Amino acid sequence: MHPFDYYKPKDFDEAFAMLTQPGKKVIPLAGSTDIIPMVRDERWLPDAVVDIKGLPGLRDIKLVDSGPLCCAGQTAQCLYIGAAARMNEIAHSELVQQYASVLAQAAQEVGHEQVRNRATLGGNMGTASPAGDTLSALLVLEADVLVKGKDEERCIPALKFFLGPRKTALQPGEIILGVQVPPLPEGTLGRYLRISRRKGADLAIVGLSVMAIPAEGGYQWRIGLGAVAPTPIRVPEAETILATGHDEATVEKAIQATLAAARPIDDIRATAAYRREMVVQLTRRALQDIIAQIP
Amino acid sequence: MESVTFTLNGVPRTVAVEPGLMLLDVLRDVLHLTGTKRGCDNGTCGACTVVVNGKAVKSCTFPLAKADGAEITTIEGLAQGEHLHPVQQALVDAGAIQCGFCTPGIVMDLYALFETQPDAPQQKIDNVLNRHLCRCTGYETIAEAAHLAQERIKETK
Image (cartoon, rainbow over all chains, first blue to last red; front, side, top):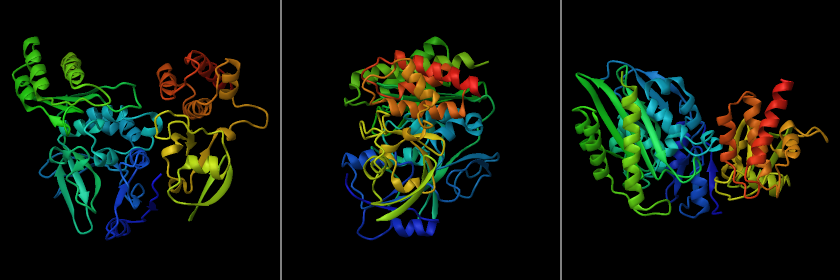
């Protein structure tokens, strides 16, 4: 395997000094469940990695007040999930289950138990695979991403964070601190579903996040898709259709709109045609699941 | 070179190695504990599963530096002398081993599960088997062994 240096900073100052060494390719590392296979395949060849997992506050899952950066203008508290929170911690957290059920479900689908014990939310986001399970969930939750560089912190909406396969809005030398999920009204329903060749070990062929949020006169819907475009995407066309109702005919129209938004490719996991078919099946299943829960 | 200290099967160990080595490399090639197997080497097959701080992890993608201060249990740490751990004994009794390559990983995963959750429901046990690639047995006998182990562990707890 390509050799690299391993740094474990004690605090943020040390971390940023390590991350910004001139002339060196240095990448932040958390659970290492993605980076090590990538280095072994020689798809990434870092000179060094900086293990950010132990930095203070990065593992917190808690409610926070609206801040000057993220979650601005919210009257109720937001759910904060630190970048180094493990997938299993997120999946099993009562707070996440209550405030961001779709994310808890998505975290439960990442890898295997042994991987979920170490893989982190920030890692899944930083890797930015179009198939990353948690990413479409963050899009439908309209989460904010809090990032920190040497000199400043800034907040990027999840909707603007994922720019392409393995490309994010993160600048060199910046790390993800965590995400903040805005408060949702009581009665909000969420569902994450995915298809993969093997349950667990493999990436999603299609991933789907759906939320129904109680709104005046009915529900406001949010639909997010993974693994069918260069980034996770939202499907505003289908969301608009569902805002008019969720009878059978409307649901079918929304499914077709979701299909139209998918731009899948053929790859090692599935053909584009199969992915399109699975978009239809997953969307129908998720919408029916949620509609069955509507009181 | 840097030195990393951890507790391995109850014994404090310090190793001085290249920081880019994985825990699996160190267990097998430095400490010569070859019970932990190298399968796919990319975090997929489950053969290299060991238990770190009570949790099952895949040692092939676990940088050694992350093991600093950790408590690590490998397949070599389960038996008491010649007295096998109930999970190991159950695999023997159920005839759940053919080539044996996937066995240490499965044993460690079931061990971690039953240590924290002796009453683990069927689904959890199925999930353990699902995450280990076995090319020989067809899994039926391993599932039998898992249930046998659970019964015996519950009797003693």
